[in-house]
Length: 345
Image 1 (cartoon, rainbow, N blue to C red):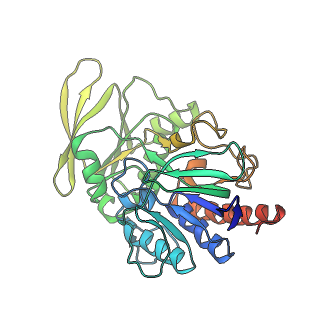
Image 2: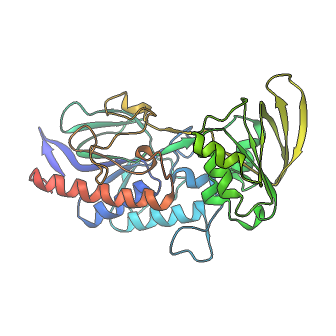
């Protein structure tokens, strides 16, 4: 911390608390940067404490968990480790550290309402009244999967009922092996998801709203030529069936409106992701899809000096917990070195 006109200025503020945010906090805390984290709200619409893994059940592809781990359990461990090294978090009762408070990922944390990156120190305002000035800011707010918005869809996704937005994350789970699955979407990502699922499923349906794929020709040909993939043209999902587990979906023709049922054991959304950047109000440069643009693909620098990005908010390709954590590590190291260059760290 430093002081400006008798006001405390933090060295680094981290916005977001998924694998990228907590990893950045761990590295920053161990570098004596005394980071402050805005984790988001447990009841929030977008930025959840723990990130999108709070909507995931079994995580089997993160190194160090040979028997797998529940998403919320893993993120609680990330949180505990970050707090152990001196990370502080913004709650509705102010800025808190590990001492004297029992906290978990359902603590009433504050979300970020707005930021001012026009000059240093930067200003970060929480939605619960806390305003912090910071020499450096790490953006790790992630990206939310796009969903159809059906009543039963997100419920089954949250409870591990066979609805997912990540085939690479969940497709190899035993519940999907040798079963009939479906992927919603017609772009390159949808083809990639469907192709990946054919390694485990007995059959994969692609539910496509139009009469052609938006995917590139090479990807479209891959789907059309895969004997395990059946493309359902001019079709959309209008209902998801199942109580504890998905049992099927109701399909509707986008041309005639005719409806029919399709029995399924798994449903995967591949209709894109939306990076959580609204609070930035356009202050940072983004790519054509809205993800934060890095000035160097090997670093975490954004278009504003002193502002760094990590995780899915700047990654439209991989969107995995392990890559997000790696980016969080890079952002913290970049921030530490940049602060040192400024004579602050």
